[in-house]
Image (cartoon, rainbow over all chains, first blue to last red):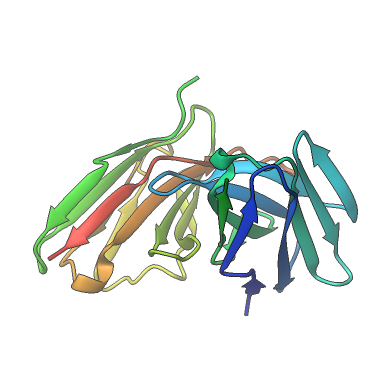
Amino acid sequence: GQNIDQPTEMTATEGAIVQINCTYQTSGFNGLFWYQQHAGEAPTFLSYNVLDGLEEKGRFSSFLSRSKGYSYLLLKELQMKDSASYLCAVSNFNKFYFGSGTKLNVKP
Amino acid sequence: EAGVVQSPRYKIIEKKQPVAFWCNPISGHNTLYWYRQNLGQGPELLIRYENEEAVDDSQLPKDRFSAERLKGVDSTLKIQPAELGDSAVYLCASSLATGAISYNEQFFGPGTRLTVL
């Protein structure tokens, strides 16, 4: 089976840095995606990792360790608009397996 | 460029009634996905099409759910009859699959929020 684990909820302060972890056990692996989903809206793409290491994209970075089945999303200089759910998804060719998402609350 | 289009955005029906959702993917995207997302959960795949062929429908409850993508473009997902537990957001997504698939970002539509009373 497929198993993707993320913390259910996190709280952080505006301007701070937060790290959202994701661990996975899947039968196949092509890459790992992070999506942001605001309440009542569709998921939107944030980042993609296929090789081990860190991918940086502005205030967002994502890290992957395939041997450990582990990824994290790092958000820097948090803004109030970053309050959303963050979904970790593993792709196996054209199949995507999503975690339950981590709800991030950014407080002033 | 237009994104993934879904309609309706909201639907409220009574249990045992039928309901249908429509999705128009991004132009040129050959892979189309239907997901169901329950509150506080991640999307769960119901069915995946590559062109007009349903290549993965293992999670589709076939006793009441059906889907079609007749010309390999837009798609319809139907539930008949609906049950209380079907209340969820139904998301459509599309991607452009290539021969050497290593990066196949999905683009999601806004979803249809279904409430079954």
